[in-house]
Length: 228
Image (cartoon, rainbow, N blue to C red; front, top):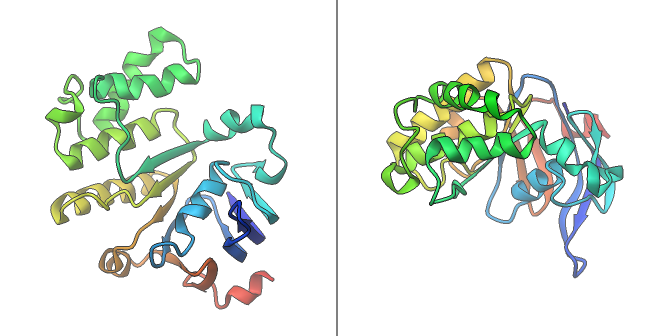
């Protein structure tokens, strides 16, 4: 599903955001990216959705070689991904239903098929009765559930979540995280960046720990060096 091989990523001024990072994620895995702010978690996610390109090394995701991906093919990759952000990124003037529907319209789904698909994914995240609510009428946890529904709209095999519980209280955090676990249990691979050490520890999923752009620990492997 994902392969990083000796990946560097440099900022425009030359400073390295990632240094010689290598790992693989198999189909159906749930993997945490952990580390301090600026450790490289978001840089890895940006490479996965082709928001950035590696300066060196190989990045493959969902059957695409990001290194060689033409700009016109980036939307094809992103249709294979669901992406969830910390700040929800919902359109405030659109209802929950309309926010999810926009993701389907962007991929060219037949208009007559969209309402049923929207209802299905909102039901999946426990918001079947909130479809006509605007973001301002929803709690933070509910807004994140809409964002997750939007990410699931195209039934992607891989879900990328960048600090999805960072703006939520403890109760909402646990509810959203359980939803992500359920999504993974249904067969979707999940890569989640998080600085919530307690959540990561209690969940006991595979963890990739980053420090100053380097992968310093991989709980799912005997040694990171095995990937060399």
